[in-house]
Length: 226
Image (cartoon, rainbow, N blue to C red; front, side):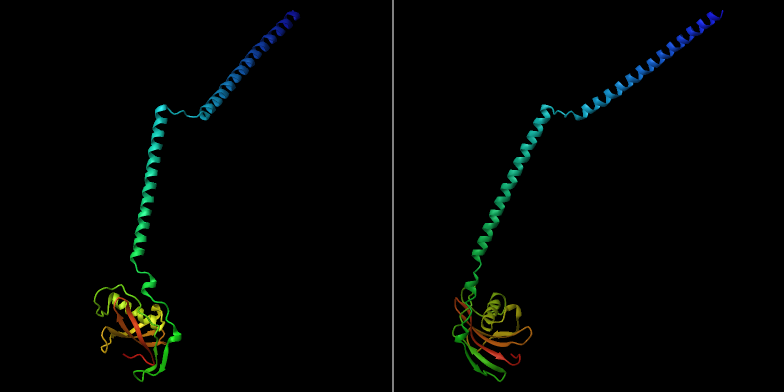
């Protein structure tokens, strides 16, 4: 009786152990299958991302045509810009040719060594009088018969002659008075001073046909008077 009980116990234990092993083995197989499935999905999705997208022949052809059109337009725009620059350059050259050069409108600096300086002058307000045979006409852009006009181009050319005779820079010269010299045909008289009024002059100028205004006499003044 005791032997039969022990035999049944051992038999039940082995059956239970066998059943447990089957369950464990099944679970292991399931886990392995899950691992394989997950790994496959990871590698498969990685390959899809890494694989370059292939363009269809039609798409590639369209891209090529688009690039060719874009390059053509770029070349055309570059040619237009170059032609525009050439036209601008030609216009600048033409304008430069039309404008009188500085040499033709302003004579060389007078030779002060030839200046004749004397004390006094036409009035008691004159400190000294200066006459210089090296003075020349300052040039002109005017043509035809000339009559003094105290505005515009004629005015500017008169001031150019006065600046030339006195040595005052136009930016430092203020006109006190400028008008006709009634004692001489086609002549003018101007009274000017430096901006700080330390230099005051009365300048006599005359018109030379085709050559412009030329200084004839400069008087250094004690006070500003007409």
